Image (cartoon, rainbow, N blue to C red; front, side, top):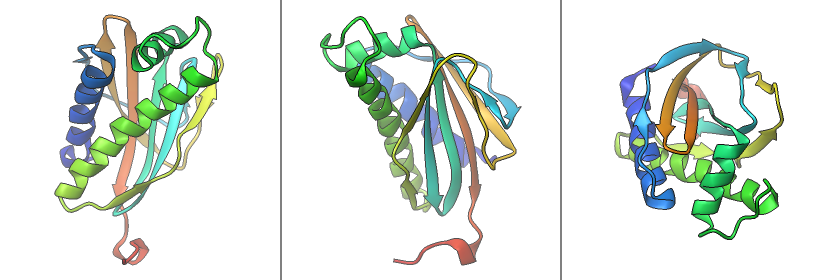
Length: 162
């Protein structure tokens, strides 16, 4: 996977986490993992279509997700991972990917996103058509967020013309 695809996700995650949650994120060691991805307790899956195709999967613990949601909602969230908190975490994924896709557009890659799908529970695995994911781990004072990225360039004949 090309660095030109990954760097926008690094930049977007740092900026969104800082701006929306007021937290500093530190990137851990990148690694490759094969599908299916072993998720965490809260997983957000967003598809990418257009010049690049694939999936982005955000994985975090429920505790980390709840703290992030509370910070995003200015402490309006409850002590449980309710519908409002789920919506906030889905929107966090949208914001990170939206910012990354905007940066990719500046590099000439026009992409669309699918709505976020949340998978919640213990021992969740997410199987996709992508064979390998690049895992970008982020450490925050409140916990960890793994961003699993599987993107490839679409064949020219598969790209939509507008």
